[in-house]
Image 1 (tube, protein in one colour):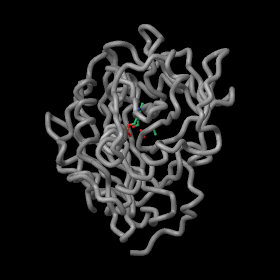
Image 2: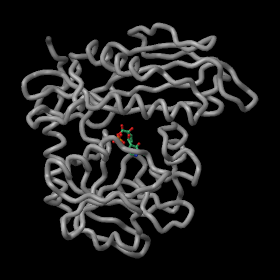
Image 3: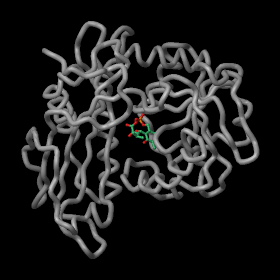
Length: 340
Ligand code: PLP
Ligand code: COI
């Protein structure tokens, strides 16, 4: 199959329209059979629930070209599961999990020419999403929905790729106790826009959110979970009911224990102890593992011993093992790789 003529190695994390996307509509209590379409635009009524009350959730996963030339996706069943839990929290009908995986499969297959070649450093980002589509003016859930999946080839989420980034402790909150922080609701990202623009204007790459109840514990950033490495090489990650349960993080904890023989801890992480860690990284589908070199907490700076030039040694090993599994040169645990 002939690949598109794209400068794969210089892609950033940006949208590029690809040939096909999947659409299924929900009406009168049922999803239709769904189809692939070339039309990248959506026409909605002015009063569509998603436009007025932000009734929308989404997912993010990637397709990779393996060393031996196959196209694969990584744990799409877990994205299907998480979207089901997001839908329930937002009073939306669940798109059946097996059909979610099938829709992802079809869209990747139809856009195979856009899956970046092995070794290019780029991947095909897959964005499943759904939204309330009929008009609603009183505050209540929609009755009609659309589920869609599109793809776009992407490079690194943070400019500079694997170079350590600088983040700041944010004075705005991301998620309230008992709110929607644990699901992938569009509204969680809308509320982070002001804070990320402000962070970028001040020269920071991302915001570190603390728990909004006490502002003493590390939560996550706008688009990734945290991983820390202690000086005695334990991988620590924050436990909180108000962060998104990252699939990358779950996978990395498994990799740390079963491939690298490291101890792992998922527990509350207090801001006060962050200065004692040896390494810090952000993990997520888009972020993969992006090393953090420095955290600015108002008048204090935490500079990790791993420095501002390269990833720390343990984060590097985690990165190499995870991407090795995704690209097919390290054997994957059963069920992690979905072949297209
Ligand atoms: N946290 C937030 C807020 C995110 O948007 C994401 C991205 O999906 C993640 C964490 C990482 O999750 P995953 O590893 O499943 O992509
Ligand atoms: C992802 O990693 O898939 C996300 O949805 C995060 C977003 C910031 C791009």
